[in-house]
Length: 171
Image (cartoon, rainbow, N blue to C red; front, side, top):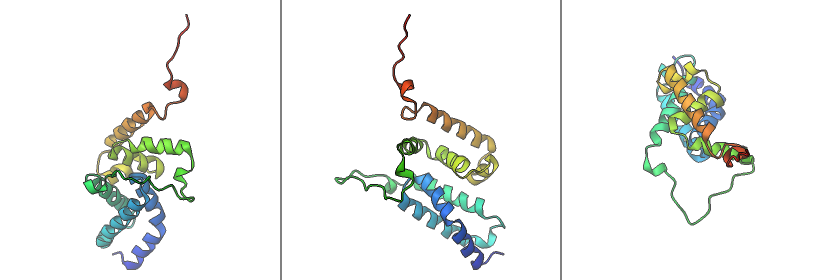
């Protein structure tokens, strides 16, 4: 049986990774912090039943919580009279124009496809671990990955400039 000290050690060791994953899922630091906190509260409630390797269990809680929050209307953006806040100097995601374009393209993917890409490529998890976290088959992970990458390949913002301009043939 796991105890409070194990949970505290786990939180201290894994919080940065969980926060990064949450941010990649929801694209908002404040919401990512809320998401991690909610996931850890839920994990604490079941901590005695969690096995020796809680990463998959907590990641599953994190992704499922994010997906359930996506359907709530109060998380949607609302238009305002004020422009949005600028990225803070320590915000590494906003440093590069290429990253910003890729980030916007990831944001246009459906939530489950984005979750698959985040877990597979940003968290570097194998397909079997992603399938376990998302409670689906490995084939579903493969197909969602394929569909997401196909959408990114044809995203007009990600195409090279020559690919978006009309091709002129000379005879």
